[in-house]
Image (cartoon, rainbow, N blue to C red):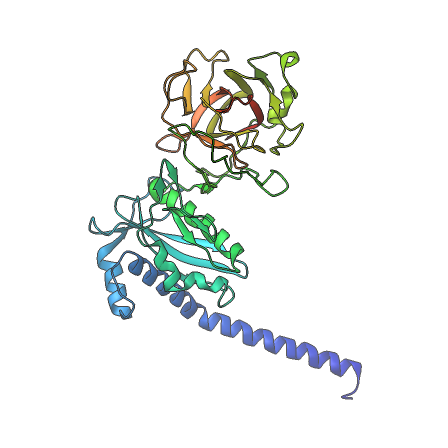
Length: 405
């Protein structure tokens, strides 16, 4: 009987049922305790990030500090994120950070100083990454790098985690954990943008900079070349944050130029909106020297958050008098909004700008159209001016992208 198929089947089914019952009982019995432990870990991280408890504080002190000295900011809409505010001005603001790591979720709390210009502290209370590698994101020694880190520099918002780059807003990466720190860095920049916007949920805009989309190598500038006074060396920027759901509105849209297509030195009119950002032979439109422009018709009025321009960057070129403008007037005579202008001497006659000159690179040049409340700028047309390179190079446009809704 015990060797029969029916007995084996019944025994197997009975064993599975018993295991399922035990698992259900354990999950139900411990669910509340697990949730309570997770809530306490989050609460302790919030209190610690805002500087209200030390490493040795007991649970009573932590819970009392959270109850008496921290409040949840009142939301003006259901779409806003939860922001924790210290009851006194010197405490600052905190927000939960969550991202998917390599092997599981990473959860933590980021706090900014009251002026929201520097990080107060970062605490990671849950992670499942490899010990000694990605798991180092929870190491207090590594996390201490974030204390006092500026989140705004030369008009650029955000921080960078890198093993190679240096700068005031750069944190040393973790060897062997590039994927973990990439995910964490993206989540931190979203949290920074949300805190600085007062609770509006923002996300990193995907500029399509994958290895297959761009020519990653960017040569250094010749040491004997005279640089313009307003030149700033630029490494890859932190992610650009905007309301979720933006897309490249310029992709495949018609472009017009200061020259007729028959007068181009090289290239075709539709190349600047074809989505190809590589910087090789045949990947650009060459308009020759002097002040030239390219205009993209989005087809209808949209809300625009940024314009990204890729000039030819395979050779080291600093383009002069770069101006990016938005308008609903196709002739750009009325209602013009300038979102980038590094023409310090007003050579283009469009007004003197205050932006810096950079060497053209594979990550493009960004014109910020978000505005102070991240509402974006309404427009149908985008026009980009360039006045050649500082060493006499032609105006070569690779791609123009316009991100909005």
